[in-house]
Amino acid sequence: MSIRRHSVIPGFGLASGVAVTYLSLLVLIPFTALFLRVGNMGWGPFMEAVLSPRVIASYKLSLGASLAGALLNVVFGLVVAWVLVRYPFPGRRFLDAIIDLPLALPTAVAGVTLTTLYSPTGWLGRFLEPYGVHVAFTPLGIVIALTFIGLPFVVRTVQPVLTDLEGEVEEAAACLGAGRWYTFTRVVLPTLTPALLTGFALAFARALGEYGSVVFISGNMPMKTEIAPLLIMTKLEQYDYQGAAAIALVMLLMSFMLLLGINLLQWWSGKRYASK
Amino acid sequence: MPPNSYISNAGRRAVQDPKAARWLLTGVAVIFLLLFLVLPVLLVFVGALAEGVGAYLRALRQPDALSAIWLTLAVAAVAVPLNTIFGVAAAWAIAKFQFRGKGFVVTLIDLPLSVSPVISGLVYVLLFGARGYFGPWLAEHNVQIIFALPGIILVTLFVTVPYVARELIPLMQEQGADEEEAAVMLGASGWRTFWTITLPNIKWGLIYGVIQCNARAMGEFGAVSVVSGHIRGKTNTLPLQVEILYNEYSFTAAFAIASLLALLALLTLVIKHAVEWQARRAYSRPQEENVA
Image 1 (tube, each protein chain N blue to C red):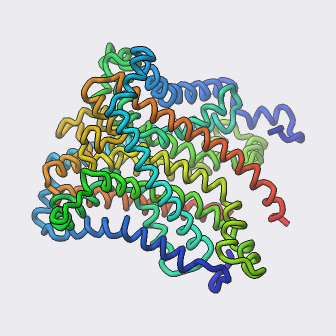
Image 2: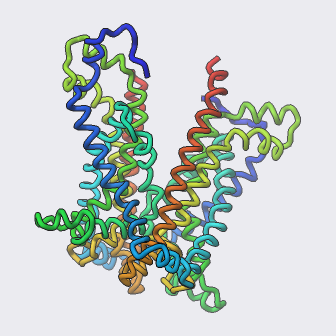
Image 3: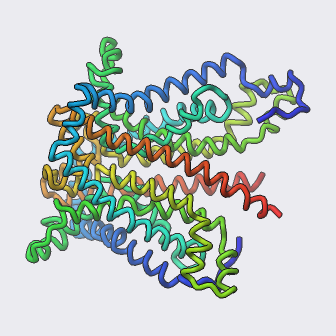
């Protein structure tokens, strides 16, 4: 990497000035307000706000549904990425193009649409209802919404690794007598593992904070289908700023730990590549 | 991709998946994507046109719908240019220079992506809300930020901070500073260097970043929902209008508004792919020179 200590290029003062001022006003100061608000609470009220049964139930639901959604995305994301990279079939380019749809489609639209699809009279719900599978207004509906929202993360992190995967390695395995399944589990899958884990963590992190696509399909019953971000919303509507800030802080800590995990994974996979 | 010629047919078969597996996996992937991605988009348009084209157009011409369209356009018209200027400035500083605290700046840029939209709205309520830090002062001076346009613009600015910057930083880092250094040493001013050297180089990345920024600005729901106050005809953006109509069981009208947002999403995807295609074409030539 090139070192640019003394640069002849002008504009550092202006560019960094604009960037730092903008970030301070828009990001740094508001988040300081959050920490100050929680800091002024005192330990007792804070614990009471973040450990009440209704709040604990919402963490459990948010974590559990996000985990389930991210795991589903690992399985289906791998299959989708594999098929899109390896098998030519009509319509492949179209399907590849719409993978990013969940990132482009406003979450409220996704929420309203998924709820209608899976409602007892909806296009999909009417086939599930006779078998006693209720999706809308249950935790299963939340998992479906979070799977939808997390899909691009796994596919888009696995796809480039799969494209770069050199055919020679698989050929070598085949020449040495390995069957196709053996080659996949022993040669291909280990190479994809860091990307799969990164995709999993990204999908999980996104799902944890997701609001728009979930609130419609979840039904928002306290203790049952109420996610943590919705609880923050409820507290705010009651002008309980401190309670809202306290729950937000706990969620921020969860996201922070996930981000740390993602960075460690990327460092680990970078090392694996370097050591090759 | 033609298979390598030195592999026999038997060898090629050994590195290819069995036909049954190919069919099964392709089937699973196609059905999954149809159910999860295609069907929802289809439903938006079917739902919007359920009562005919006339009802669809009438739903879009409602005064509340029109004011939501205008509000959404106005918010994007402020947020997208500001974040574009910020993104270019931040990328210029981060990609072309070495300085202390760079990692922290990058973390701050990424922060809005890893924070729940509800929390993004919350931090601004804590500052400017009725019981926020500046709340009493604002009330005294008759300035309303929360439950008004400034609040909506602020949270939209916040959630769209990363898009342009994140697109440009890796691109500009990859391109390095050699061309700009050459231009400056030959006597070009900083602005001239930027307009004639840097901007053409980052053109496609910039367009892609702006498109993504715009899609998020127009479609943001959670954060705007916290600060908007849901005042009909005044502080309802398009996504909030979808929510209100849906909760009132005006499904056709809700899907009519949603169809506008879905069209925007599809347009964003089309432009994204056009840009990627252009970028591949534009960057494939200089890369050959770099190899030498």
